[in-house]
Image (cartoon, rainbow over all chains, first blue to last red; front, side, top):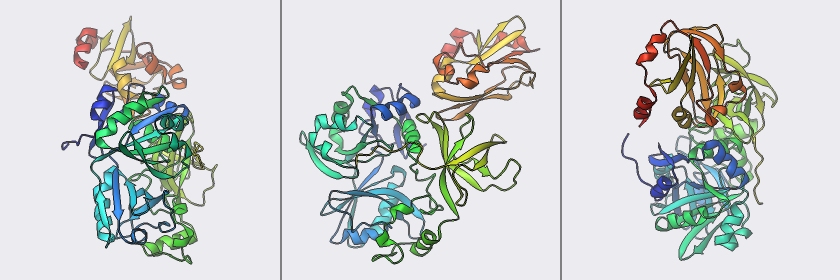
Amino acid sequence: MSELNPLPLEALHAELGGKMVPFAGYSMPVQYPMGVMAEHLHCRSEAGLFDVSHMGQVIVRGADAASALERLIPADVAGLGAGRQRYGVLMQPDGGVADDLMFANRSDHFYLVVNGACKYQDVEILKAGLSGCEVTLLDDRALLALQGPKAEAVLADLLPAVAQMRFMDSQMFDWMGAELWISRSGYTGEDGFEISVPEDRAEELARALLAHPAVAPIGLGARDSLRLEAGMPLYGQDLTPEISPVVAGLGWSIAKARRAGGPRAGGFPGAEPFLQELMDGPANIRMGLRPEGRAPMRAGVELYHSVDATAPIGRITSGGFGPSVGAPIAMGIVPAELAPGTTIYGEVRGKRLPVTLATLPFHTPRYKR
Amino acid sequence: MKFTEEHEWLDADGDVITVGITEHAATQLGDVVFVELPEVGTTVAKGDEIVVIESVKAASDILAPLDGEIVEVNEALVDNPAAVNDDAVGSWFFKMTSPAAAEMDEMMDEAAYQAFIG
């Protein structure tokens, strides 16, 4: 393994007993002494602090940045109000999905948050596709997420004004001389905030949040089980260049204005097959899966119609144990005509085990809209 | 009690050897959520993967520490896999008899195992 880049909170993770693993080119905490299960449940009942500083924070500046971004993102960028954020996918030139991302309208520019493992490639795609715009990958800011039902109370202790924010608001705040970029969003299915902080103030902010009795540090392990219960896709597993956004169940992110017949229909790589699939309905789609019994079914498990069928009909793209569900859960790509409640079979260690199709999410989100 | 490099503990009582995983192994695995045990009466060879353990993080196996036969399994673990994390040494997986029980003499004792895991 090549050398891993240190992140601003490395020393704090060590002090907190974080078990560090290589992730997206960085050394990241997979869990703390509390353990994945307890961290997950703590985030659902109290508040959890995540270090997601590996993620890419990108500024896009230009006279008509919104229209430019619509050439690469099949979402309604131009219609997004100032101080608001949206979810979208970034298309690569061949029409496959390069990444999924959040983009925020900050009046005179856009602020994007992209996946850590894709950020350098994303920036190349943005630079090549956004002529007339200045694209900057920031390297001097950390990113924290504070998630859970007590997140608002905790953050409002430091910054009372955040209590006024609604889901997907994105604003700047001054915290003792540090400029914080805060959005009310997250990757857990809980209410919460994502907080961009100058790297030289990141540890101070993290310690101030951890000082609250409701807050525990949460590692990547629980981050994955939380997002799995929330039915959220993980780029690289549930969404890849080979899986269309429609198959990945992300058709909702393509606003009417960008669909066939809309005022700004298409105009991005792969628009034709993409919009056609959206109209016709996809042959396969990402769905929830509930394995019967206790055996988890993880990514890569092949799915079959019956115990003796020869050809698989689908594949699990993410799976594991859902601590809040109290049972194994998974997501996979299956024929779209199969209804929730249908029993199919996943092959685990050579055995076909029954698994029931379910609607996503497994855990109903608790956002403050 | 003896220990293997695969982080199993073995406890012999007469002809019957009880097998579990060490506290160190349970900590490394993380929260155990699923256990699949062999059938009583199964003949096993040393190194066979005979128990499946899945934690919140990953799947792993327990290997047969000796040639022999499974004589009893701890069904309670199937219903309560988390017991492995609560008390690894008290949570046995299976009991076996072995014609090669003498190999246990060569295995690590507690002090040697503690040195092994550092």
